Image (cartoon, rainbow, N blue to C red; front, side, top):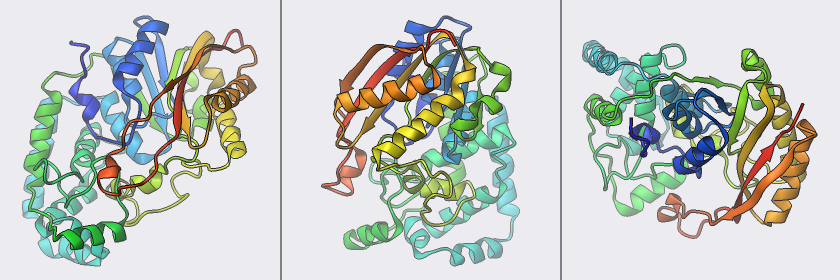
Length: 373
């Protein structure tokens, strides 16, 4: 299989500043085929998928259900025929379902949903939201991940997005979105949900899928040793990117995808995770110290931790001090062998929708060798 960017990487354009090329470079530099790689802040599953494509064992976890669904869909990709068969079953079931209960649910939703989706599209979305057992069924999980990737995006650029005009990476807030659409006279177009998902499945799996399977779990990084207890001292490399200091709130930014997976029909705060966005450095560094302590028993002697981190109003030297202190709280013999390597932040897609918003000030990469436990 080609090691060029695999289409499964783009299964869902979940917010990330963690390119597959960065992961591949460090997987090749620090591990061999058959080694185990772990990402405790999996996001859209970049580390897991790239590790599988490079013939490594891959473990991943994230507290956010959106991340768990997307990463889980990459950890085990069901056979193509099973996905298409399941989509056909769901479409037939939808056609046989009484419309009135779906319309009752549709009318009970906030105004945002009537503006965000054509009413016929929203019926199909509501049906899938009810029927997809994404937590327990691998095929349903893969379909749910496809739906998350199409749930919202730029309707003027692609007919593969279900929504009115929105960023594809984050869910803009309901009141702001409604004003944006009203001011521009934008209305949601009818989108055939099942056809779009079938086409997405064909496109994503055209290059095949990894020969290895990974393990992706939803859970707090501080419980990683409990979640992955049978992998104690087996992880050769941790390659990850924790939430940045005072930059974004994933629960807020992914609220519409969280709703599709069973959450509230509005942005929530502190219900999925209280650690999405720390604005005070001392609390942030305490959280990271607890995170590294949560994974410490999984990492092999002389294993490496590769971490991309960032924050507002933070100099590279400040990030370096915080990283060294928190890593050594869990790995007393750890040595910083590379970093901080500072990279320029990418332009954010939301600048097109909210001009003048401020992103992160700096991001930096670190590589630690943990030494002997």
